[in-house]
Image 1 (cartoon, one colour):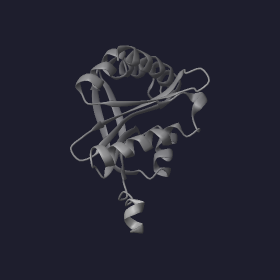
Image 2: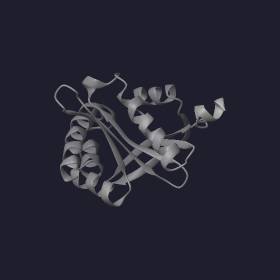
Image 3: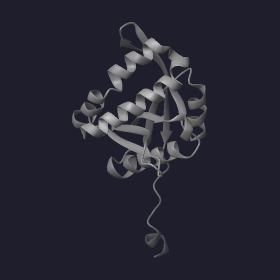
Image 4: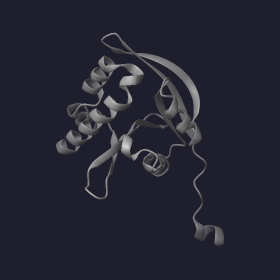
Length: 171
């Protein structure tokens, strides 16, 4: 499990440095990597905080190319982390992660909705989430410490009812 957390933290560093420095700056990225995306925090999130991680690997060399994490809340599943290496964006990895989250949401937790937080300045991600059916339900500014504020939209996906078993419909 520790090696798993180490591998995720390495891809986190690469993705965050490439994608988020232009949005929130290097100092805040470094702070957030240390506080929220370090191997020790990822390991703690899995072992103690109920997070479930999904990973995507390059099929040719088994290199980790993206990850996502979900955690159940009171009545919804929080799609907490979604990060894909720039060379692999647009290939359906996000959709795959979302499908995994939907399956957990419906069949493991019996929730009818998924929520996420996305940086207000991450325009591309906001557009993609809207295209996937998420709607903005709130706007929050959160003090994460050391003088840093995260300005997020809270977005929600209401799941349609699960399809009935085909055999039951035919009978």
